[in-house]
Length: 225
Ligand SMILES: Nc1ncnc2c1ncn2[C@@H]1O[C@H](COP(=O)(O)OP(=O)(O)OP(=O)(O)O)[C@@H](O)[C@H]1O
Ligand SMILES: [Mg+2]
Image 1 (cartoon, protein in one colour):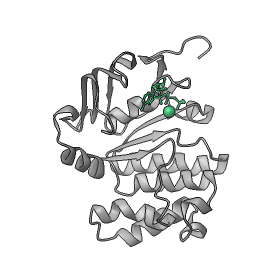
Image 2 (tube, rainbow, N blue to C red):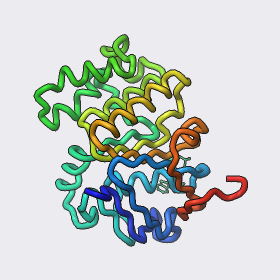
Image 3 (cartoon, helix red, strand yellow):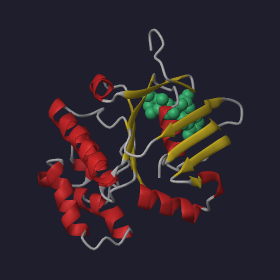
Image 4 (cartoon, protein in one colour):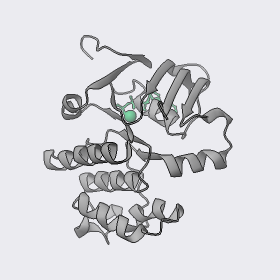
């Protein structure tokens, strides 16, 4: 698939009055890594949630792996999310009653992965999370839970990885682990990575950038952004 993500004139309003993203046109190629850059409230998470099938556009289209998300049933949307999309949420969204290891195992079990246990162990190792495997999200630090959220998003080798502020709580060593993991998944699985961030490190590492200003997507930065 040449363009796993196609957004066509998409807008989203939460209140029926103000569009928080407006008339967005975006095509992202297979294996490409792009950065969405913009101030607080500019619409980055909203756009990621449209691509991630968490929300549907109020107008326009979002086409993910060839499927128009507005035309899918809730069950089809859930399947698309499970099989194709890894989503690192800005607030991590870990399940508090499950351990770190169980959080990473969850998407693997739902997808009936026969090697779920081994895969979870390998992700724990990749992100240096083994010491926390049996702890609950409430018992680990912000950066540790960010890495758990990233490991969980990578579990099913998604075709599209959506990473909302993935390095916000990480030190430079953990940032490097995350960048290396993104590189491996792109090289190994042709995964398309769309990250939203304010992190200068990601800005320096990701060549293709889009800039959101008050819900409008631009290909160039504006002074003071
Ligand atoms: N569920 C919601 N209901 C109503 N308004 C919302 C909702 N989610 C976001 N908004 C509003 O939409 C606008 C865009 O929010 P969004 O979360 O997409 O911004 P962002 O660029 O991700 O910001 P940040 O850098 O702070 O994460 C903001 O004005 C926000 O208050
Ligand atoms: Mg956000």
